[in-house]
Amino acid sequence: MIPAEGRPADAILADIEAARDRDLALHGGGTWAYIYDSGLASLEDVAREAYARMLFVNGLDPTAFPSTVWLENEVVRAAGALLGAGPQAAGTFTSGGTESIMLAVKAARDAHPQISRPRLVKPTTGHPAFHKAAHYLGVEVVNVAVDPVSFRADAAAMAAAIDADTVLVVASAPSYPHGVIDPVAEIAGAAAQRGVLCHVDACVGGFLLPFQRRLGEDVAPFDLSVPGVTSISADLHKYGYAPKGASVVLFADAELRRHAYFAAAGWPGYTVINTAVQSSRTAGPVAAAWATLQHLGEAGYVELTRRSRAALVRLVDGVRAIAGLRVLGAPQATFAAIAGDGADVFVVADELRELGLFAQVQLSYGAAPANLHISTFGSSP
Figure 1 (tube, rainbow, N blue to C red):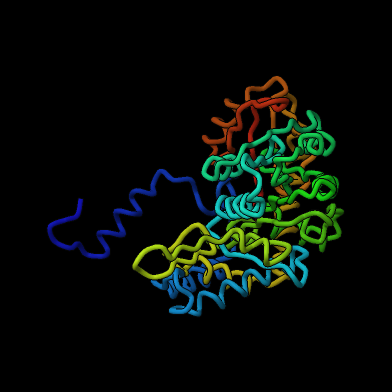
Figure 2: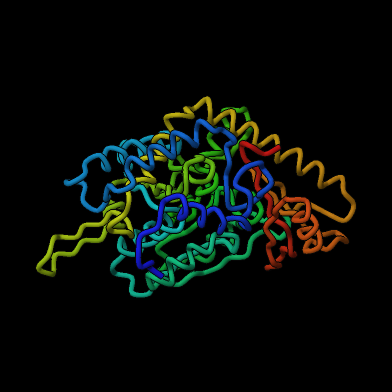
């Protein structure tokens, strides 16, 4: 309730800290989902300050606050340089992967106004954000089973699922459940042959896989440089190490991005033109994302990627040496799915929690048994 009289700041902040007592730890490397901790205090400081300076700036109208346009263009340009964007590419800053994906689905739907019952083809490992976007936008989802051993999308099965009503085909780089990269080139090629758009969900990998390449790792092509890939999403608040509320969606050409926009002038107030789903929104996240990119630089990202990949390799090697557990598929990034091979993963999750470690439980689905999802990041021990 709103108090009758205003309260002092220290009492208010103390209540917030008390409410967080049961939250998972944000630092220390023991929370293996939801957060992506760089372990760098200086990075948190500059991101926090940048966020605070733009906290009350409204991103609704760039003519009133041109700083928001400058910041967004800077962040989108940086993402495009990493993700194979050509001279015709364009992008939008969003609040997260779900909003980025929603814009990609909207653009695909609205680019095909002649199709009355649009369909979206995705692997079963594709993020539920595609189902959410399809639900909101009136698009039917066609779920295609993945390979039961590698858990990668089956390119031939995906191609076979495309029909005259398909407006978008989806691939993941990597998929969240198992940390494997779908065969993007094959999927995008099949889509292009049928004149269908292809979106790559690189919300996890967009600010990770390019730096794995720079470490000498063999990462298959997955971005806008791949023929047939028409859009891609990448989260700065994952392996971009920015505070939450930061993602980008890039389109291979600006004309396709226009289909993601919303505009309305049919009322007596101001003309509404939205590049993203939200209208009024704080400019804090885009400022913090830009500050993060500037503070880390490419060398910083390479080092954080090296640490997170090394931690993942150590963890996977350790699990493979434990009787009763097994790793599903062959993780190619910084996620791993650990299943029981005699052991009960729910019990394992409880025991880890007693040790101050959090692994996310994933229920059985298709060929995948119940398992524990674990992600590593810059501060992972």
